[in-house]
Image (cartoon, rainbow, N blue to C red):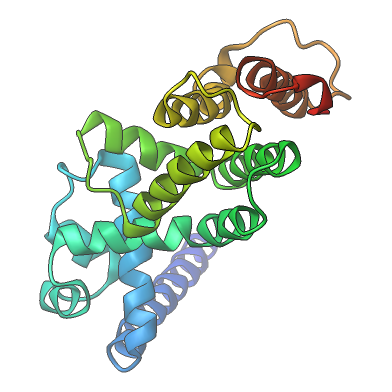
Length: 228
């Protein structure tokens, strides 16, 4: 009996502490705009990835983040604005890395580096691929500004590389980009279903990436023998 009473007292103390910590966190967010903003973004991203944008309500985001709906509107104006900011946050580092490659111009080396950058970005951020999947399922064509910017720049770079004799000229630049992206995305769409990988010492994702590059190079590059 005494053991049970002690167990309940420990549970009550831990519950009270957890509740107190939660209340303290909420109070702190109210006095720290950056903390509240980050909490909203984290909560919304989790819900959007779990349920999709359309099925997530502002009330659910407010409840999970521990803030009011009015505070969410203050920071992001609308659910659409919140979703756009999440996409900007997730794609920011990738956008900067690709711009650095674009600044060097498209060569065999920079195109391969670009494919590797995209692959490793998705591999390191699996939630991004889920985000892209939800965007497709829900017909979301209003991508974040960074994504639109990269796509526009990539198509222009591909056209310039075709004129410079780096890429074959007979394929529309947008199709070249679609092939590039599709080869990378295929691993994250289908890699989990692949079988026959018995050697645990081999990083099969990296093996796939090398094969994907060879397929792209042989199909699109001029003088693919120099592609590496």
